[in-house]
Length: 159
Image 1 (spheres, rainbow, N blue to C red):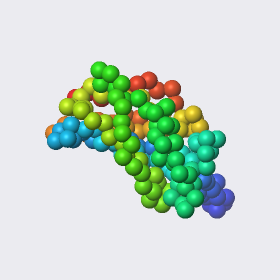
Image 2 (image 1 turned 90 degrees about the vertical axis):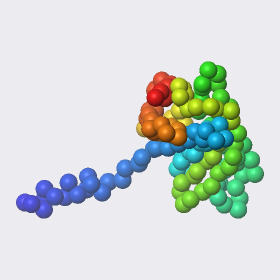
Image 3 (image 1 turned 30 degrees about the vertical axis):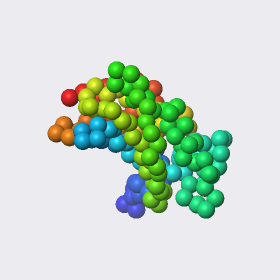
Image 4 (image 1 turned 180 degrees about the horizontal axis):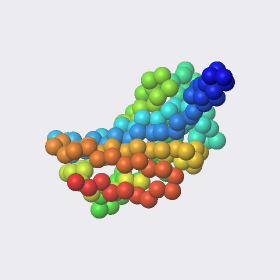
């Protein structure tokens, strides 16, 4: 009888479970007065989101020649940064580590990360379960974090 009881429990524990999460870390550098953004994304999720635009084939010898600009354009549609006005970033680059894609962006002329308004809808147009974690870090300021789920309103990071 014990074995009958354990089977459903074990099956439930090993059943596949997909997680749809991106992590955006925004670090303020007072020395350069920049926001340095590092976005950690599952590569095949972002490739899936852009498959109707172009086959990215990230990290392969057949990577789309405009992969960087296509990713940046998608980010522009799904990330809003505001501080008195909408902020624009510069694409710095990307790297692939296994199945994880790291994308690097930079916003210049930012004296402080205080009162930074963020809206992050990355991949929520593709995956209903998508969660986007945002961490804002500043020198001598405690890290602030917020999770964006589908339908979330913009969030202002305050200290």
